[in-house]
Image (cartoon, rainbow, N blue to C red):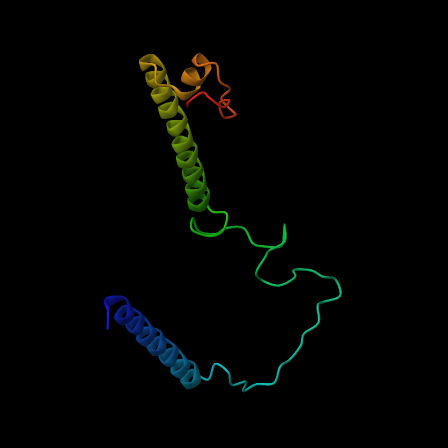
Amino acid sequence: MNRAESVRRARRAVTAAIVTTSTAVALASGAWAQDAPVTTTTLPEDNGCLGKIVRRPNCGAEPTSPGDRGGWQQLTLFVLVCAVIIGIAVYVWWRSRRLRDARRAEGHDPVSVARSHGGDVRRPPPPGISP
């Protein structure tokens, strides 16, 4: 038996163990059992606050503590995350400009090299001219 075949057998054994364990856990927890009858609910006539997952505008309560929805801690965190993302984008832009200027000063900028050889930057060179 070679190494590749033994690796395949080990993978199959691990997969079988995972499937067996997850099936046993699901059966033991009664995941497929349905104890209570299914009930259906109807929406209120005025369609006020539909559900509790997505709140409609002006349907909630004002934040009472800093960690509540819309509290100053959440807003501060949001502004901080936005500032970090903008800062990363500006740094990457600034750094790429510096590196491109350095390559251009050394004569290694791909755009400058392609233009100096008479080729177009967006299409391959004509036959007979090596890139």
